[in-house]
Image (cartoon, rainbow, N blue to C red; front, side, top):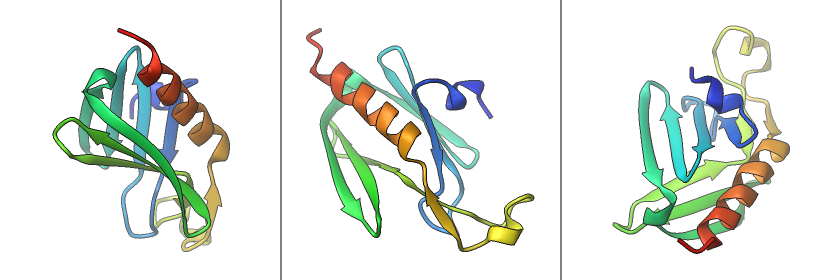
Length: 114
């Protein structure tokens, strides 16, 4: 776990009950992510579009990079089968504050001239 996942522009969620937790965070003009044990990053200058839409009671931010790959960031967090979550398995909540903070920063930084 990277402590930047919990920074001002960090967001952690699980888009469905049977998926691994995903974390996204900004470090300068680089968007980093962790999906389970795999990690990656993309420069904001390599992102072609940002679209936010509603999906099953929560918002999703879909980022498309210059090569056409999609990176989806979900607002909804489903509780899984990890320690401390078992009693709430199948329940969900919205992580609206961190989602809104990250998406707002992405929008602002993507519009900023180079």
